Structure formats: structure tokens, C-alpha cells
Picture: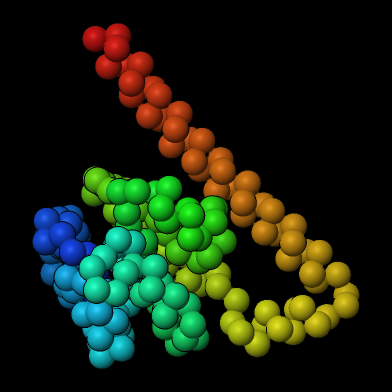
Amino acid sequence: MAGHKILVIDDSKVIRVRVKEMLPQGNFNVLEAKDGQEGLKFIVKERPNLIMLDFLLPKVTGWQVFQKIQSQPQLKKIPLVLMSGRKEEVAEKIPEPFEKHYFAFLEKPFEQKELTAAIQLAFKLSKQRPTEDTSNNVAEAGDGSGKIQELEAQVKKMEAEIAGLKKQMAQVVTIVKKLKK
């Protein structure tokens, strides 16, 4: 596992260091990029096993880096965690649920368990991403595959909504417990 490269692209040194400190020691080689331009160079040169991308970056924005990754089949196979303290700005460009775009979203600030969950989800989603050839063949097939794919997409959307509701419920419970003290 020591060979696993994680690229953290964030203009905040605090976030880059925080991610590095939250990961198990010795298991990962964490590469750091301070802006989107530097991040793109690292992606091409290093071929990381995971990309953690801040959405709001100087020089080349996280949105531009995301588009570049999505436009290249060999890059979009890399698991991706998109990070932002402003989820609404991400949702303006990329409609929710984010999982249907095959990336995990991590809202800043975050704790270690949220980081771990986002990384696990990113790996899971990257494995679920259809290959270019498969999606074309399914679209051309007239045997009901399209309907199945549509239903699977609806199920994924509902699962994402349920996950969001669970998170909101946990937050409400936390608030209620604090109020009771």
C-alpha cells in the first residue's frame, strides 16, 4: 500500500497538511499541489491512485481541472474526491447527486471519518464507472437495457438522497443533545 499516491490539490496548506495527517502513516505517498495548474501537471506526470480536488482554486479552477479530468478517458478512471466549503457553488456547475458523476464530495471543514468515507466512496464509484465502449453499446441495444440503466440511476439517486437525509438527521440529533445539556 505504500505505493498508493494521493494527490491533494488545494490552495490551503492547512487542508493539504490536515489530509496528510489524517491518513494512516506509511500507507500513502501524499503529493501536494497549491493550485489547479500545478495539480494538472502532477496528474499527468505522477498518475495518482486518488485525486482530492478543491473546487475553488487560483490560476486554474477546480471546475476546470474537473472538466479536464472528465474529458480524458485514462484520467477519469482515477478515483476523485471533490472538496469545498461552498457546496452550493459546486452544485451550480455539477448537478447533485454528485455520485452519478462518479466522484465523492467532501464538505470542508471535515473530520477524519468523513475523509475516510469520502475516499472509500471515490474508489467504489470509480469501479462503477462504465467504460466508454459499454455505455455506447448499451445505448444502441434495443433490449430494455436502457430502461434498466434508467432504473439503476434512479436507485442511485434515491440512495444518495437517503445518505444526505441520514447525515442531516445525525446533525439534528447532535444539536438536540447539545441543547439538552
